[in-house]
Amino acid sequence: MQYRSWFRFLAIAAPAALIAALAIAMFVARASVNSDTGQRMESRVADLGNSAASVPHTAIRPVATRTFRGVITDDRCGARHDMHSGKTPSECIEACLRRGANYILVNGDKTYRVAGNPDQLSTFSGTRVKLIGSLAGNRINVSSIAWE
Image (cartoon, rainbow, N blue to C red; front, side, top):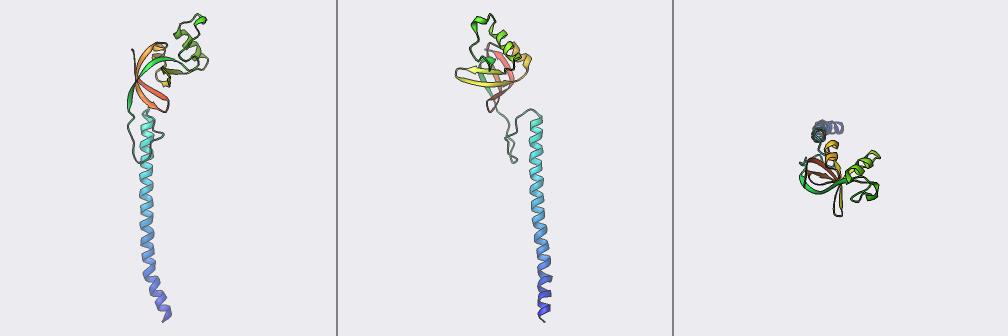
């Protein structure tokens, strides 16, 4: 008689445990699919040129564009180029870039690294400009540039 009660307990508990295990597996699988979808969406946004490295899986935020004003120069000389070199600021910037410097935008005490079309940046180097672009950290991804 005692054996029948254990058999009856197992007959009831085993299907309940199986149903609970399937429910948990479906929940984990759904969460995994949602996570993968978010990662794929992030990589698509990153492929489009936006910086989505810091975007969480749950929401993809559009990158806001802003307007920046300042002088396009290089991070080696900054806003002050050697006046005794006999070069214009634009020539000095080009020489510094050949030595490994990067373009920056200087406005007062603020400096931003600038990423964009090198030919376009070269045209505006050493001059005061108005940039439109997105800011990621301390780097401006330039979408348009004009003289100010």
